[in-house]
Length: 119
Image (cartoon, rainbow, N blue to C red):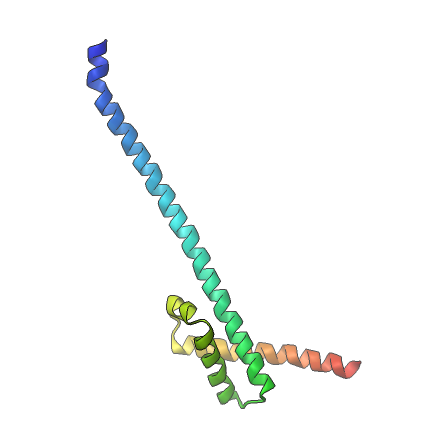
């Protein structure tokens, strides 16, 4: 009996090590996907926040649309360069986002101006 156990034990240990390596590989891959998505979401949120802040600043300065877009993009690039570097949006996508945030800020400001006028 001892002879059989001695002969089988190396194979059992090899099977156990393969199973453990598979579990660790799966856990590592799952963690990488989860945290990678979280990091991307944080960068995306930071970029959108910087663009909206730049849009509010452009509205306060009463800039023309083209100058406003330039200010918004400059503010985002200065505020969240890591987010832009990580997400790698094209210049066109950044410009579209800046225009969208400018419209969003203008709508909010218009609602605030209307509320103020109604008081």
